Length: 384
Image 1: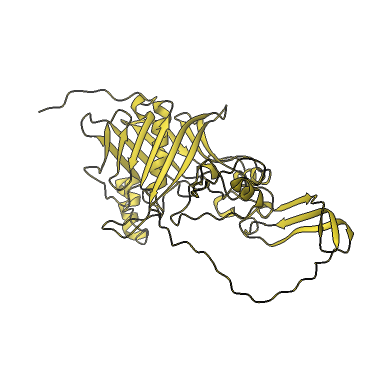
Image 2: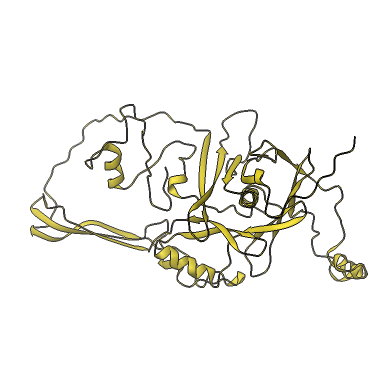
């Protein structure tokens, strides 16, 4: 039975793509109207050598001049097709020298836009300045077919490598009444000098951005006091103690939420959630560091189709060693605890807010369940 004739989707995108759910193991998209787009391999794949693809007469160059070049045996694109209507979406990974990697999106053969880490003049230096000032840093941009940025996905800035704070405890410590204290922490980012020269994007002052490892730190040192700033005399002796330890807890799910913001107004226009499944002993195992399912929701079909390219770039390598957008980092309020289920907190104000010691209502209930939204950790590596 022949299929009915149909016309291609408009280049502005189909409205049903405003919401989708990507099942990574089965490689299919389920749209907001329950349409299913399944992964499809092309019927024929050309196996011509590199030079012969330019012109058939250059085949001798492949045989005699370039025999050591590896053959392009990996596809850089992925097609998903609706088996009932025949509509098709293609995602093609594209890499150029001195350009950031991007994924081009085609709807029924029509180019509708691309997703990439937006290229700026001295991009890494601008990112370094944004990190130093704790400003939102652009991670990914969604662009239309004319190159105009429609939406973006940001992360929080890391901040400067030097952190200083003054305190006024107004209390007695040993033989001293402390009026004012100071704390200082040095946490630079360790990087090579003039890093990024190989990909034409050098950065010179990345060491001024806050890193993950502390170089040196001093906390609560008295700078204005009355008396002798010495520790009080004390005696210590060994006494038996009892430690309460919880059994290990294994979680089989974690997630990351990414806010999609409008490029001009910075207002939310969509949400992308990646869900991960842990490898608890079962008959099915997979790479638990790659998303198991990705859900997206936007305000229109064009953004939804481009957002599906983000989901594809986060999960499938498409001819590369790792997924194109594997390094996307969610904000702390959109990051769940890991598979262990435990969250570490090193900041006293957060613990006081959790236990209600700051004068407000405690967020930790009597049954040891956090009853309200709470973010632990820093503004970069925090956990909700």
